[in-house]
Each structure stands twice: as structure tokens, then as C-alpha cells.
Length: 160
Image (tube, rainbow, N blue to C red; front, side, top):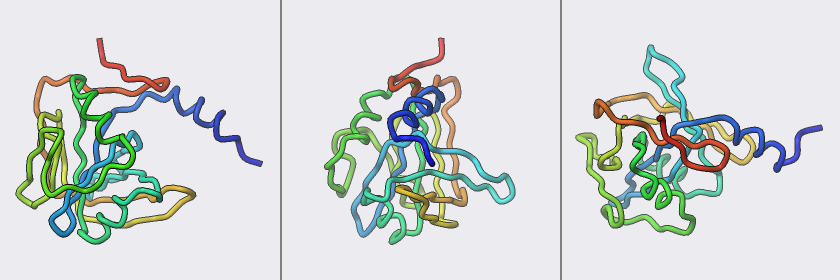
């Protein structure tokens, strides 16, 4: 017997997490998605993991392109998080409603984020209604002195 969806969401809502945006570019079109399920996996080699809904177009785009980026949002980027969390958006040829930039590897990242990294796909593992996307980190960038955007109990928070 497993827990019902509402009680599971209530418990998981009490786990504070950083807010990040996963982005990719496939055939000249970029797309991104707000995620809170993001973690490091290994230092040698440097691997990270993001969990992506199987119903989202980004999984196919990442599979086609072979790479993705993760931008870690700062406390002043709630609107950016909301934009990438909005359902029904379509891929675009360039950033339209948020500030963005292109990395040297050709992957898009969120402009003004407190940190970002780019990855090549190491593995994609379907589990339940999500796919665990493991990436081997290729490029990194950090803006020192920034405070993170946090998500806790179904709302945004920041460090005091």
C-alpha cells in the first residue's frame, strides 16, 4: 500500500529546496522548466540529477540534443520561476519573457541566476510519472554573494 498523492505532497512540501530551471536547445528552439528536484550525484565524474515530469516536452528535447543546463535562481527571481513553471508554453527560438544567455556549449541559461551548469546526458531513467535525468557536468558559473530562492510549504522563501 502506498501513500495517497495529497498526503505525500503535504509531507514533501515540508522539505525546503532551492529553485532551479532546467533548459535545453533542440533544433534551434529553446525550452525551460522550473524544478525543485535537483541534486548532485557524484564528484568523480561530476554528475547531477533532475527529475522531470514524463508529460513535459523537455525530456524529448533533452534526448534529441544530448545536453541540458541547470540555472539556480536567486531570491529576486520568483517571476522567472513562475514563468518557467507556467504550463502550455511552447519552445521559442530565443529568450522572450526572461533574461537569458547562451553558454559556450550552445545551451541556454537563465540570465541573472546565482549559478548555472551545463551537462551532457549520462542517463535517463523512467520512474513512475517522472524521468530521472542524470547529467555529466561540463561547464559551471557562479555569481558570488547571491542569496538563493527557496521553496517550502508551497511558497517561495529566502534566507534572512
